[in-house]
Image 1 (cartoon, helix red, strand yellow):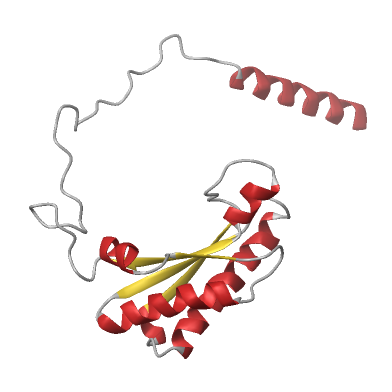
Image 2 (cartoon, rainbow, N blue to C red):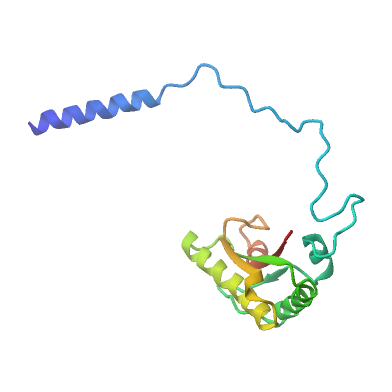
Length: 173
């Protein structure tokens, strides 16, 4: 009886593998680009004449010393350089009290996905907590961790890893 069951299971597995091997004779055509030949829409952070709109993400990036702070290996502490950057961000955010922002936390490629998501979360929250301590309403700030999923620098060396250990403040338009 056990031999018959084993034989039937093996036959069923082979039959299902055979079904997976079927390949279509002709692939469907690629999607049609509906925007081909069209002019791209104007950027949301600029107005019709291309000027940067006050209170936009483009204005934020132009006005602050940086939208990015960097961290040491396995660290989420705000150092003096990060404090100076976050101070400039807080000053800008105080000027535009209606503006909301998301703070993204990132990690380098080393470590597990779960570890890097948690580390990115700690980094984003460290930046948020600093901005809140500088007078920014916490309801204006959201955080998200991308872990190692969105590297800014590709490469498996210390220079690349150092650029990827970061948090980025993005103004929502």
